[in-house]
Length: 152
Image 1 (tube, rainbow, N blue to C red):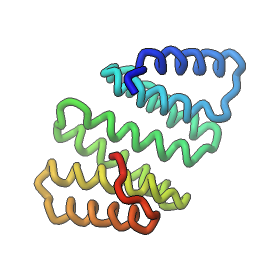
Image 2: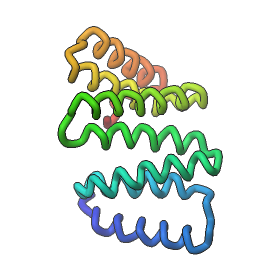
Image 3: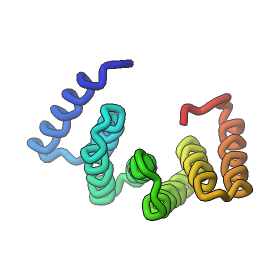
Image 4: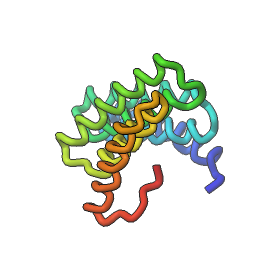
C-alpha cells in the first residue's frame, strides 16, 4: 500500500516492546512480518536477520506454524538478488523444511506457497517436468481450498 516506512517503524516498536517485556508469545510472527516488510523496503540483510530470528524464537516457543512461515520467508529472501547454486540449494532446503511442517500441521495455503517456490527453483535449474508438477500440486491445493489465484 506504499506505507513501508510506517510499517517498519511500527514493527521496530513492536519488537522493542516485546523484548522489554520479555513477552515471547507471537514474537516470531512479528519478526517474520518485520522481515517481509524489510524485503519490500529492499533491506535484505535486515530481512534475513529477522527471518532467522523468527525461526529461533518460534522453535524456542514451540510455535511450529510460525516457524513454518518463517522458513518459507527465508527461502524467498535467499532467492532475492543473485540465484547462485548455493543459494538455490539453501532455498530448496528451506522450502522443504517449511513444506514438511506445513503438511504436518495441515497448513494448506502455506503448502501451496512452498510448492510454488519449489516450482520456481526447478525452473531455475532447468527441471521443467518437476517444476510443472510442483506448480500443478500448488494449483490443485488452491482449487481444493476454493482459492482462484494466490498472490505468490
